Image 1: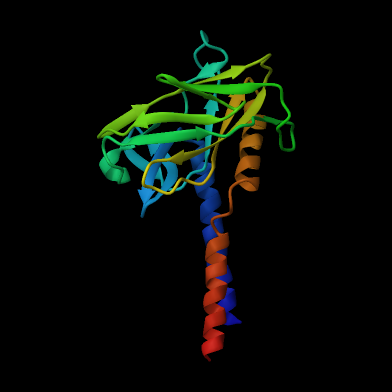
Image 2 (image 1 turned 180 degrees about the vertical axis):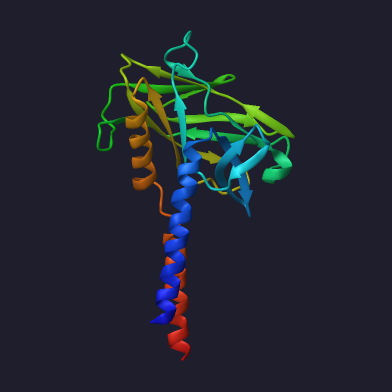
Amino acid sequence: MKDVLSCMSAVAILSLATVAMADDEHEEHYDIGIWNDGGVLVTGGWDHDHEELAVANLRVFEATFGEDPAFPFSTDEPGIGGVAADLDLPVGSMLQLNITAGLGAWNGNGFDNSTDLWVTADYGPLSASTVDGGPLEFLVTDDYDLHPTYTMNGEARNGAYLVEMYASMDGYQSSESFWVVFNLGLDEEEYETAVEWVENNLVPTPAALPLLTALGLVARRRKRS
């Protein structure tokens, strides 16, 4: 019993640390940093100001349409970037961001996928949209900072919009899904509520795995005794 309580206390501490880190992430802008974890692609938060992977595992990114008043329904955030040596990716390889079909629109309690709007992502000669999905390709160089253009299409109206993606590269296992929550003229507090919904409902809680592992260790100890 003492072992179980100790394990649960450790998980509680880790949970608090995770919440604190999530709060900190909202205070920073991160580009999508794809890194190689033993042959598996993982998404993290890349900080170009300090040229580092500031968050090792990040699956929810934020962006705002219309930060350039000349293009009210477009944005070039989030970008994708990093230092190849630091992310353990081969220079000269092609990294793909794959857009998943379907756009979610915030309804105050979740995201509705029946919206008549769509988002298009363009980079170089390639274009992909949430209508049918598709890939964009990026060349990995020594130090890269690349920004596709995301555009809201249709009779755009204020709200928060959700795009699902995953990263892939030849010879590596594709990343898990990650999400970009776009803000189009929505009140900042309501927008952050939408972002938190994605974090709480679509991304597995990091503390869940340590808890299962800890309980497994306790079970094995009991079995041995």
